[in-house]
Length: 413
Ligand code: ADQ
Image (cartoon, rainbow, N blue to C red; front, side, top):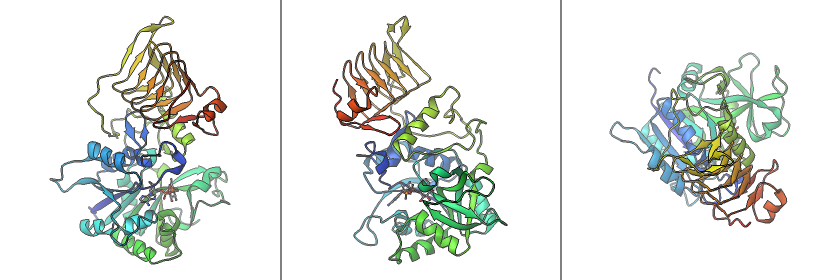
């Protein structure tokens, strides 16, 4: 297959319960990340940079801001037959929403039948990483497998969050067994403290995928899940292969961020991944134009820093500051500021993530916190200084002590 016809499907319908309250009224793939991005931008940038320009994004829960973002950032000319299109759940096969990610594909098979691809690339929308899917497709075709799963070595303690891959001793590219989120995982023979985890990205022969999700739809015992049911279906038939992410590089990745991949499905993981962006030598480099990360930015003015305080002008260090933001006589450190944030005089913001339109009043202190869109912190308020006080005010405080203030939550002094 010299020049396969490829359709990409982005699974973007997950509820994202573990990211509450950030997912109260937006889908997980629409959660803002890194100041100007939404999580879905990473999967879409990887597909586009890999040369795949026929992409459907399957949405379901609370998809309004996700649809709007895709329309603003990713809609392109259809003149050349290319498209990046959000597709809502349409109840084409009955009056029900998607039962799981495999059912999302089953209910959307009309898209595959219209496009008639040779290969279907299926990816999740909730990870931060760079990956060349063209290299994965090439390995898939060479191996003759029906399904190829992207895998990455991960600490064994995290195995219960992932699909875990066991390969044949004699052929480390073929999958012998696949266990979805096992409670008693077995480590790798050469590294007992690690497992080979599924990254939730798959390449399929189109015909084989159609057969698999169709047969799955008839199975009353199935949870209709890609990881839980479809991958095991291919493994059972001896037709599943693994693509080892760490054996391959993408253009322009640096020594420091080579093979960076983060599942940001929990608040703590989401927070840590943002801190990776603001460390002095970034663990994940946004400034790599060989593999650009695309998004939409509004017509906002440049960020501005004004007014002195303690002999220093209002300033930010080790931080990302987006357009439209004004830091006025305040001190910001190790933080990610989205567009249109105001940080007012004599306030301090450290190790925090401030989303669009957040307003920090004078003399306020914000530490180790995530503030959702348009949250207003009144003059003199303290956030992230006392977990009990934060919980009493109705804010989520995670195990590692990150305070999260949701959209529309009122902050009292
Ligand atoms: P999870 O992320 O737990 O594990 P899931 O919740 O199904 O699996 O989410 C996978 C992707 O599918 C996400 O992008 C989500 O938004 C989307 N999705 C979920 N339900 C959907 C639905 N009904 N309609 C459309 N899209 C939907 C998966 C795999 C594991 C793997 C991890 C890697 O099952 O094997 O290890 O991803 O993070």
